[in-house]
Image (cartoon, rainbow, N blue to C red; front, side, top):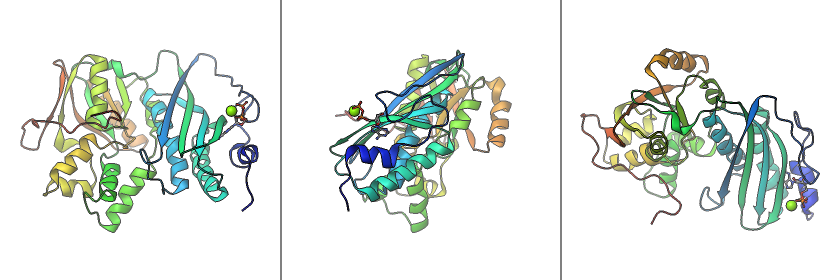
Length: 324
Ligand code: ADP
Ligand code: MG
């Protein structure tokens, strides 16, 4: 394989015609023209080899996920994703790997009409960092701080499967072939809930995307809003694979995956009771499962009530990179 220089690499794999940018890849900075009346929603996420993904991960899936986790953040704000920047450290310039990575990345960028407008490329331990920019009408962004007593709490999709796949790879559980395939898809190919986020503007009182697990992420909403919550364990949407473990000897692990698993990239949002019919209509229109899992309470703290109506004595801890 011919050696690939830094600029050749950028030219070949990351410079694409843009759809809605004044100037994209190739100069010292990109030039963007935000829509009148819109605020820019900006977020950055880093994926580190060995920490966020297994080093031998399929590069196409990694390209997908690198962008997906960022799109998910904008979805949680109710913003429309428009532009992305990609900074990467690569151990080597392997064209097969890069071609596959770019395929996964641009397939998702195309699906959401996001322009890649710049980045940075260096040699180093595999590490990928995307900055995403989107737009949201001023005053309409979904914040973590808007939940109010009596609001219903919802989540999209199902939770826990990505964590179940990780548990399988770590030898903590053994999934069947079909189960593993489904859980792997959840782990490697999360679908960012962008359309949901945009359409929740004016309906949801607060929102967050679930990257570190339901208990911890919902906890951020509760803290920001100065409220508490009660969740019904039985109501939390889960796959058949997870449900099976929840009813068996692997219940503790299943609970951990469901409540603190991480990597779900579903949205958790709150909405006043008066908007319940709007949420149901949205679920049908998208179509996407939007499940009511609990209610916002005045008293602080998060309680999860089990199938017998008893509060779980303790909740599995959310992922924390610096937890001791
Ligand atoms: P500078 O040295 O001025 O920071 P670089 O030489 O790092 O610029 O990059 C050249 C051009 O290629 C810039 O427009 C930069 O945004 C873009 N670029 C570099 N790496 C990537 C990448 N991985 N994906 C997209 N664009 C990139
Ligand atoms: Mg540079």
